[in-house]
Length: 345
Image (tube, rainbow, N blue to C red):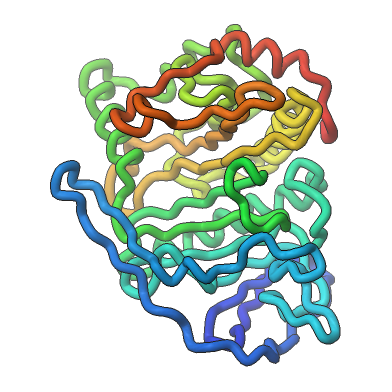
């Protein structure tokens, strides 16, 4: 894989990741862009101790443009985009409308393909393998930046999730603090290790075994519906070996994940014979704390509770963070195992 770094017209970095033998990336961004907007602000809620990012400049971000004006597609004559090249394999660039910026972190956009009309689950096995390598590379690079406490790659897909750009893409957030969810997971893992002398996720994997909530298994990974799933559709993909983050995965573990993930995505879209709106969230260790406790895993979840009904976060979930799920995890797992893959493996 070849990595090329260029600059966009307003000074933001763009990173091209290409297969060996791809054309050199030399195109220049010819747009007349305004200077970068104001940096985000972070405030701490005194009642919970949790951080909240204020990013008022994001109100002017691009919102559901027609396909012919997609800013994530390659540039064409008379139609410059965020990607100056006429084609690309995988590209990552600094978000023009970041939630975190300046000394308050960094946000990057990651395009998985130049093809506007496809989805992650329809990518080739080789391309998914490249995406995993890019996630690992960006995690390592962002983790080395001053002030970054945690790196979070994720993908939002579907109108129901709130996606404003239909092009297959994800984002990578470099937080200047450890997120509340990660803090809670590390505290729970620490208490469990102190009591049992074993890592929590290892025992979760052992308990799942080949049980009723397992969707698919491979040499290095298991995909299962968690016992206490919050969402009507939720699957965790967990490596069998405890590793803190994506850079720590071996080449064999990365390749094995790519194959298993495509199998899972095919069944998720086969569940209702439609593209499932989802969020795919990588849970990684913070940069400088809890790394011996963390166990890398991918959480994929959807707000679609039936083929045409959404789960809304109402009083209990939004007000008290107490989740109520209308779908039994064992039933979901059985339906996913039986679902005909919409594509893929």
